[in-house]
Length: 517
Image (cartoon, rainbow, N blue to C red; front, side, top):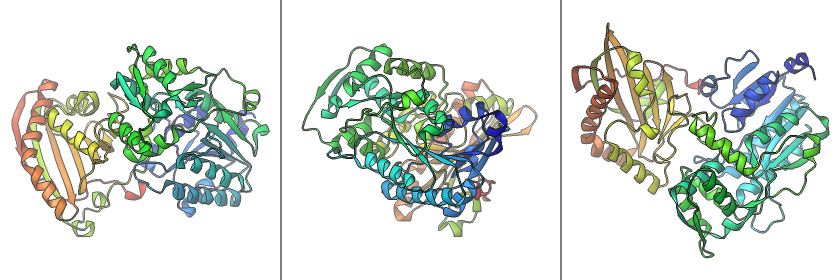
């Protein structure tokens, strides 16, 4: 196919802000394709580095909304179906995935799409006790292939790459636990594949008709147990060999809690993944290697590449990127009655010498390994409590230590706005009886004078929310004033007016149209 043909009709990539989709889009753009990137959040799409590419088209749509999905599919030549609902917000992910796949089948058939490509999961359907996660993946594949549009299914096991959920689980387990008490699944065979090989196969399926309406197993050259994979990681990370002790009586429920506390993966996702670790996932069909030939990266080399990218702060996408950016309505409407109650707030500010750009450098690095500049023990305690009650805690950290973009996870926050050098708006994702925001603003009221503001806003849910807010309220003054002083000290700026409380405006917190989310 020549370059002109590639750019005539777009290729739709669903889940374009997810881990795989976020890497596939730039690969296709670099290959000359016109790509229509789809996500439930237009703002997240606009924050991606490839958003302004001349062949990139951004569209907001939801696979559960048939009307918006039809608009996204209209005029497309091919579709990459990378939608998956297994996240911390969706308990009945199998039913959600079923509905989304059926909507896609109808939309693709109606709009005359030429082909569809789906990335599913390995695991034989006749295996005893196949996990709900893998069974759902197989069901989605069957629904898509039952439609009129020729659908290619690629079935993968563990995907190794910086930021992938499988790699992050392995990284945290091996780095944090010199001795591991594990279930029997540590000896289960699996066939990992490097993210680079996955992306090459995905692009290749667009360029050959030999794969139409077929299913293929994709995997790397190694078949290993999880124990062997852990050993390789320890060697490549320069760690002593880990002592692994399998315990037959350790249940899947306990395994999921274990993964939840040691790794940054939330408990609902950990529970689904833990159930799948007992299933052997290896390739039995190797036809794809001849149809789309490429050098297959070994597990050791894939781990080396991933560790190198982490050390160099070049993690393009992360498992935590996925999910809908859905701020509460009161963030936009500015109507407390409409929001269902009074929005409580606490705000402090300080005036410093300098320019907004000087302070922004320190604001954009907040969280993760850098921390929150003050009250570290209090932040860690809140994160620990959140993990104990099933929340995300602080372990997610951040994707990049120097950059933040809309939709990024930041400890137990989610970035709603990142407008340098004036504003960082964060939505709380920790467990709490209400909705919370942290608004960090930088203003320049005079030449060489900077006003730095920290504003906490909270919409309580019932009596429990009010008790929660007023219990923490005494700590706000201490914490916010300490943070403001510490940021000034780190930036080397003179404090012109000490930290003090003030009353911010009460209009809409975010000026963006909520429909853009």
